[in-house]
Image (cartoon, rainbow, N blue to C red):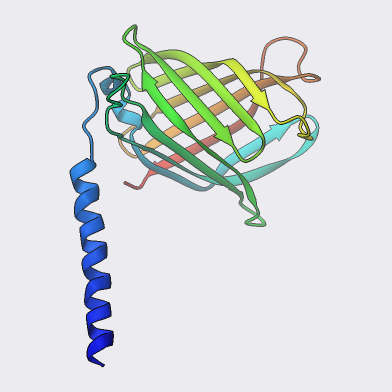
Length: 195
């Protein structure tokens, strides 16, 4: 019994140490990244996301978006914020996709987002940040050779902070077949800030 108690105490102390360590490494936003302080946090939508595209059925989805401070990279002097997103079907709860990456604001004021997803895509997006709005456009995309999705040729991602509680993301794109020019809206989701 005493051995189990010691193991439990050590287990609790280990997690307390991890928690305290995480508080120590929590970083403040760099001067450049203060422009996107409004997007930092954990955002979630249970069912307000909507997927539309000519070649797939319209559906609703949930998504959790997590953007958090990260320590300054000592070698580059640039602070990238950690980015993660997870989406699922609202009706079936099937997992859609995950994205991981980094976002930062350049000294010239433009934001840069780099993502890698479990759908076989990597993106490099750059765009303008204004008060409570950010519009990113695709600069480069990579994809695995055996992806079954239509090749994405262009993409525009818009974030709009409506107030301290709600933020909206609109994703527009162009593939090899739709549309010939410009963008078509692919997804729209309204998040609630949970942290």
